[in-house]
Structures are given as C-alpha cells and as structure tokens.
Image (cartoon, rainbow, N blue to C red; front, top):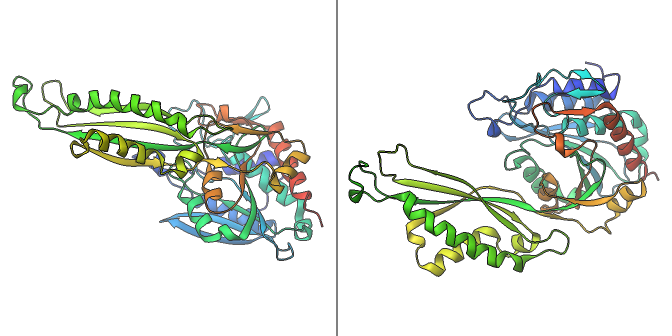
Length: 379
C-alpha cells in the first residue's frame, strides 16, 4: 500500500485501523495494537527505516523503525503510542476518519494517532536527509500506554542505553512537557462474614469495618504528603475514587474494597512511593492484619532537566516548556535512562472524548514542527 498523499490522509488511514487497548475495554472485543503496528511498519519501511516488531504481550507488539546514519552516537527517539481507549459512548464513527469543518474525527485522532501521523509525515518528507543528521533517529510506536504502559517499560528495559533524548507524542499544543506526576492506584480491602440482613449480629460487616479506617487513613496521608513537595510539580495528592462492597441490601457484606488515586512527585516515588505510606499507616495502628493492600495500577513521575540538550533544541524552534497534570510514556522511558519529554499537536482536552478530533491545521503544524526539530541535528 503506498504512502498516503497528505498528512490528513495518513491520519485517516491510522484512525480506520482499530487499536483499542483490550485492558481498557474488557468484554468489548477490543483488537489490540497488532494491525496498527503492521501498517506503521509498512509506512516506516516506505520512509527508509529498518523495521522490527517486538512482541511485548501476546499479539501486541511495539513497532520500531531505525533510520540509517548518525555517526555512531546515541540516538533521538520519536515515541507515540499505538493504542486507544474504549470507543463506548462515542457520538461519531470511532473508526471513520471523517473530515468536516477542518477537523479529522475518530478515536485516537488526538491521543495519539495525530502525533503519530505528524511524526511519520515529517520522516517521510525528510527522506534521505535523515541519514545525514548528526544523531541516528528511531521511531517507536508503543503498545499499551493507556493501561500500565508495558510497551514503554519493555522498550526502556531493552533499548534504554541507545538514546540521548526522546520526544513522546502527546497532544500538548506543541509545548514541551518536561515534568508530570506519576499515578498509583492502591486498593485497600477488608473482609468479613456474610449472613442474612435480618440477623446482622451473626455476621461481620466488611463495609462498616473499612469505612472508619478510610477516614483516618486519608487524614493521616494528607498530613504527610506535603513533605514530598516538588518545586515544579507541587505536593503529591490522594483521592478516594472508588468504593465497592456488598451484593444485596438484605445480606451483610463479607467484602469491601476502596481504591485510592495517588499522584506522586519524584520525591515520593524515590522514597518508596504511596504504598509504603499506606503500609506505614496500618503498621502504626497495629491493624494491618485485618486489611489487604494491592497496587492495581501505576505510572512513573517525569522530571527532565530543562537544560537537557533536546529541550533546548525544542525551545529553539519556539516550543514553550511546561508541565502537565496527566502522565504518559515519557515517565517510563525516563525511568529507563532516556531523558524524555512529551510534545505534540492538538489539545489534551480532546483526548478520550465522545467526538475526538484533531484539526487539520494542528496536524500539519505538527508535521512541520517535528521536521524542524530533527533538522536541528543537521551536521
């Protein structure tokens, strides 16, 4: 299949390949990233890259395109993700790629097939010029970003020493996100003994056991989190986001689970993280044996030095340095030794929405932007 004739046609091509992350859409028949990875591999080969598909989970690969050149120096990495969130509840055809009013609609148009299309178009336009840059260039389409980030973890573990800088494709209005908090979800659960609701004294109510502990736990955490302040990102935070317990009003519940959403600063992450704080709380009460803790999701914070050469180059072409309240693959790549930022066309406000879209102008501006960034490495 030939390379599409415009950035818009390229983005339409990518949107029309479903790549819903199955971990974000249980029971919805989500196909995963493989078909999208195969198409991106074809596009990278058409741009002159040596392409590898690295399977991270069964049927779910990263796609890696390495371009020749670079004089044996550490490389520059362009890294969008292949997967999207669920399409349930969308008000448009999620895989239609419809164009109207100067916008391209579909799941992933903003997050992050739009940044992927802009990166691929920049590589396509540069052609053989890529081989004459002072650094080797690699494109990686990462699987699994929307749930636990196995793609970026795998890539960093196997290739982290090959790169001096990574630009992760996220919709940032072409601003350079050099710092964000990490996210950790911790589930606290209590068990009891079920019985008929008419004789509650015969049971052990797990909901009543857990509720008062949660109030004390939150107050205890909120008093200690400011000690892990970051001058750029501020204080870590905790939010009680979910409680589940019981099966019927007339049955005393034998289980109750609550999920806490922590947003971690680098200082908290490096000190053992949120789990250690929660464990310390239960140890201080000598009641830990009555409750169970588990981490059900986590991502790393990001804090890349603004004096990093790649950031200075991005600023030289007009990108403003900033932070973000969300997290992305940049944290995982940085943890693996690759100084990383997130930067791409479009607005995060459109990510995951019912009518997700990217404007054609933003897409085209993104392609020009990525090309200008790579051209700062001209020999």
